[in-house]
Image (cartoon, rainbow, N blue to C red; front, top):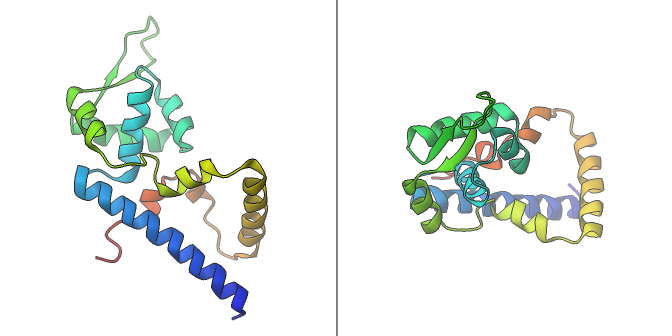
Length: 161
């Protein structure tokens, strides 16, 4: 392999490992996946939002957000309420336990990669997006569905345990 290719590969490995370590820390401290904690923080930041709002904020499919909420509801961390005149609209709220978990959880809530990307200037993001598009075009086996899944679902924290 070319030296530049190996250097890029090493950087990808560091990014994946950093995300994995963060997910492990969240699971160890909260007993939640990274995506579950992110969902809790999003609901805490905008109580009363709809499931579709949460999916958009997390850049995941509506069904993925709904599945996350199912797990959080079973753990009694999130409440789904139908208070609107249109009973089809479900509003999301944290329970007292959900608020406690969020208050004691490690950051960043979105994960280290989304947080780092969010801090990059637009020009750097434009360059990165162009380069990643070229890389994805060079990959023969491409999982388009992965684009709308939480990173913590793609990189399990227990991978190297």
